Length: 99
Ligand SMILES: [Zn+2]
Image 1 (cartoon, helix red, strand yellow):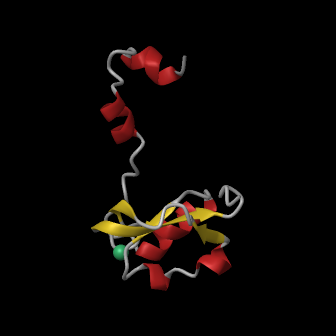
Image 2: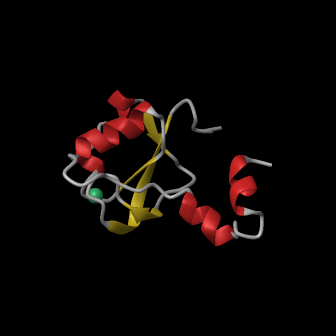
């Protein structure tokens, strides 16, 4: 049992609420996209980019790789913060299961 279950109770944490709680709050107001993406890189978190922003991110220099088994994903782009139906998921190479 983790701390969240103790505070809220197990009946509060429905699957939909667990998904919403794990969602990134996104880039802060007045923050540049590069700083937001850089912070997520330092934490080795997964990054999602739209078609326009994926070209601006040098994934080789950052040590990231594309998940080949997930060619497109839906979600909010970490660069421009817009919803994209066909985004590219980047994961750090140490965390990617590429076998
Ligand atoms: Zn974008």
